[in-house]
Length: 362
Image (cartoon, rainbow, N blue to C red; front, side, top):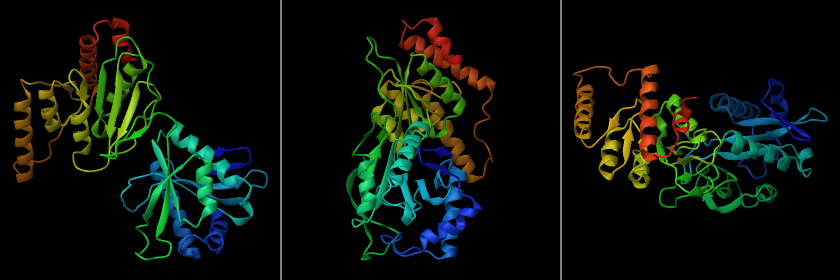
C-alpha cells in the first residue's frame, strides 16, 4: 500500500468489483478502447490484475481517495501478455472514473508509482501507450517526463481496426540507462562511480542461473569498493543500489546473454558462470572465468570440461543416464567461491588491503 497527499494505492478488494465494473462499462471512460466491458469481462480483468500482482510482487492496484475512501480507479504496472517488437516490457497504465478527471489524480498517483518502480523494483525502463486521439492520457505521460518514441499496431487488434494505431512513450530510470540499438539491451540501473586513480577490477555475472548467495557475496565486495559488478540477464533482476553495481537486460532468446558477455568482457576481467560453452569462448580471450562453486575454467582444463559436458548431455538425451545436473549449493560451495573471489581480487588489485579484500564475507 502506498499513500500520496490525496490518494491511497492499495490491493484490490472484493468490494471494488462493482465500481470497477461500472467504470469499465462507462462509454466515456472507455472511449479510446475497443469496447466497454460487461460484468463478467470486468471481473476477469480484475482477477488478472490480482493474479499478476501476487505472482510478480508488483502490478495494478486500486486507487482510493483518502478524504472519502471512495474507489476512483486503478493505476500501476503491467507486463503485457502479447508480443511485439518492444516486448518484453513493463507498462505503466491507469484508468479513473469520470468524476476524478481533471484533478491531477493520475499524475499524483503516477509519480508515486514511477518512484516505486525505479527506486524499489529497480526497473530500468517503463512504457505507456494509447491511441493518438487520447490526448488526455498522452498529456499525462508527457507531464511525467515520458518521451514519445513512435507508433505501433497493437497486436491485440486486427489490421485495419480504427484503434489499431497506438503511440508509445518511454521513461528510463533517473540514472545512467542506455539502450544498445543493435541488441536492444538496456544497461546500467545505477549512477556511475566517481573516477578513482586506479580502476577497480571488473566482475561480470551471468545472472539468469547464478545462485543468490553468490550474487550477495559479490555485491558485498562492490559495496566495500574492491570491485565493480555488472549483472547480465534477460529479465530485470533486483540489485542493491550502489554506484559499483549495474545491470544489463538483454532481449530474450537463445544465447543472447552469452553473446553479450563475449562481446563486452575483456582480458583480466572476471565472469561468473556455470555455462561451459560460454567459458570456452571467454577463456581464449584472456577473460578469467569461475563457476558459482569456485571452480576455475582455464586454458588447461576447458577442453576437457567441454568434452565432459557434451558427453553427459548426449548421454542424458539418449537415456544412457537419468537425472544428473549439479549437486545442491551448500556451505562448502559458498566457501570455495568466496575463497576464489578473494584470490582473484588480490591478484587483480594487489594494492587492495587485506581488510577490504576479505570484507565482502560479511
